[in-house]
Image (tube, rainbow, N blue to C red; front, side):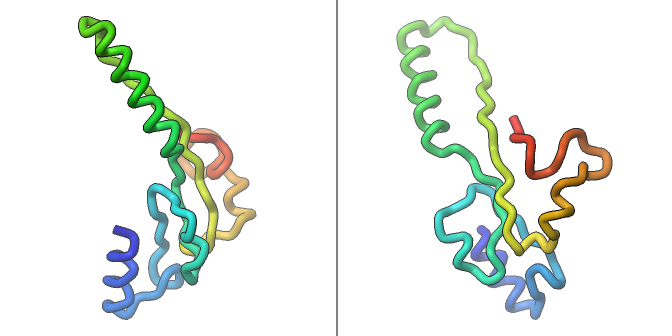
Length: 106
């Protein structure tokens, strides 16, 4: 989706981050190769898979067990596509608790 968004923005004659900030979800190893580097929300993919397998095995062992939700922490990976400077990330965002880029989302 991120690459599709970049293509559509280029076709529309828009520039990231000058005209529009862009943040993608699920960071990937070559996100920093783009110009500008892609700011991302990174999720722990291995841990997501391992947790899913563990929950499945628990469910198979005990089918009557009630469902549960597991939330794993994400991380904000600051690069330049969001258009914000690193110093701005040290201030709380208006109307939100915590410090952007410092506290994992759960």
